[in-house]
Amino acid sequence: MKIIGIDCGTERTGYGIIESDGKRHAAIAFGVLKTNAREPMADRLCVIARGLREVIAQYGPEEAVVEEVFFAKNSQSALKLAQVRGVAMVMARETPMEVHEYSPREIKMAVVGYGNAEKSQVQLMVRALLGLETMPPEDAADALAAAICRATMRRV
Image (cartoon, rainbow, N blue to C red; front, side):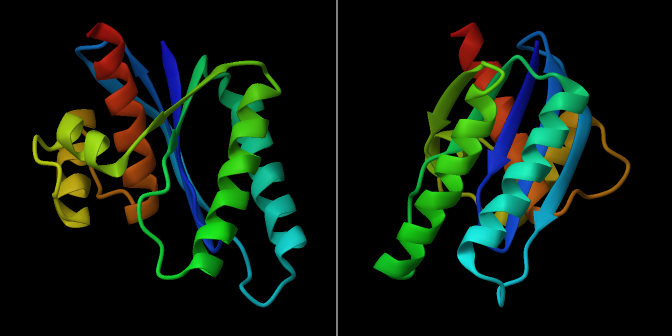
């Protein structure tokens, strides 16, 4: 099963695609879609939509995971993040694939075994679980972790 994890952000949206049987996971692709903070929000959302559409078309994942909003510095940040999440969900449903949502705590529990794990711990575990030679960028690691979480939860 191919699963895409999406870690939404207005300036950096991470994505990670894995192939998994629920026990063993392999990274297929991962990266970060970057936007310019000085551009209008509508333009930034288009950049994210285009990027996700291309990644989904290229790799053909069967399921998607979008991290739930857990914390935002203020209400304006939360609203912007919700817009990015909406774009991510629409891009996934266009295929149409199932879209799942997990909290950051659930994702960290599935990958690290500790719901309050630091980002660096998530990166290290993602690298180890996927046998990556190099450390993935934070946002991509979070996206890969979300995909691993879904693969693990499918078995339960």
